[in-house]
Amino acid sequence: MKLSTPRWWYVREGAPAPVTRALLTPISWIWAAITARRIAKAQPVDPGAPVICVGNLTVGGAGKTPVVRELLRRMPGAHGLSRGYGGSQAGPLRVDPNRHTAAAVGDEPLMMARDAPIWIARDRVAGARAAVAAGAKAVVMDDGHQNPSLKKTLSLVVVDGETRDGVWPLGDGAVFPAGPLREPLTVGLARADAVILMLPADLATPDPELIRAFGDKPVLVARLLPAAPPPPGPQVGFAGIAMPWKVERALKAAGCELADFLPFPDHFAYDAAALRLLEQRAQVFDAGLVTTEKDWVRLPPAWRDKAHAWPVRAVFEDEAALERLLAPFI
Image (cartoon, rainbow, N blue to C red):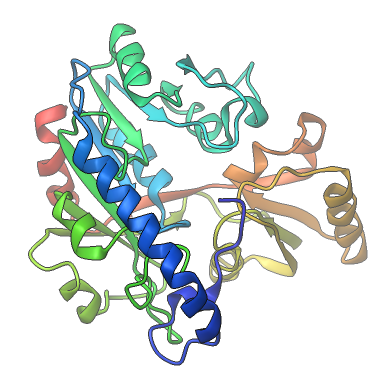
């Protein structure tokens, strides 16, 4: 979705947009019904290798792609599979970071292809089969919890663990577009084998009430932590992700001397006007530019030397629990 998700989605009580929510509710019923029917009618295909799906219960960023990268790092011989959202190529296509652009294959696949074999395919079955034919011992699918086309060996759902300042990551239980859920919570959880709860770096423990919302599902706690320090000196930060304010907060928490921060819509294609704005803000503050790896790959090649890509990594609290989940596929 090319949007910054509305904050009122994540408020359970006293939401600032009750009229908007009420108007969108009938559409959310239709959305949920269509999703349920598609899943019920599907006949999942076994591509010839285990499929580990890393999905979402909600619309917007929860840290799913960093989890995929971490699983691929731990699973030699596995290939990643993405729909290639935002890219023009339908696939199946193995992403070459030296040849492809974000406009062709999508920003997340291009970013991940720097670390591991990544395939894009609008047709997930064709993509998984292509990966297996190329030697993949397992397929780690980025997103797809609501896509029933492939037979999943392991289904993991990533949930944002942020619950401060009145924020509730599951909203009030409403389905998109009246709330952040992609389908009713109990329905989505029923198909999941485990929940990965992604906490902010500075939050010591998860909210017990949020843990209870997952019932008897195993919960693995992880955090997005810096893989390197932010660049020194004054910086103008920018991000085009679903929740750009989280990047701003993370940079500050990591000690970045943040002079300004510019949010953009999710998967934003940086055009000439946006690049001029970034350059002007950097000049005003006599600062460098810092952004996410996902944003950095969307910059024109000539611009990449002008901005610092700040890497983060999904770090799990209970490494042994994660290894037990992945052991059959390694």
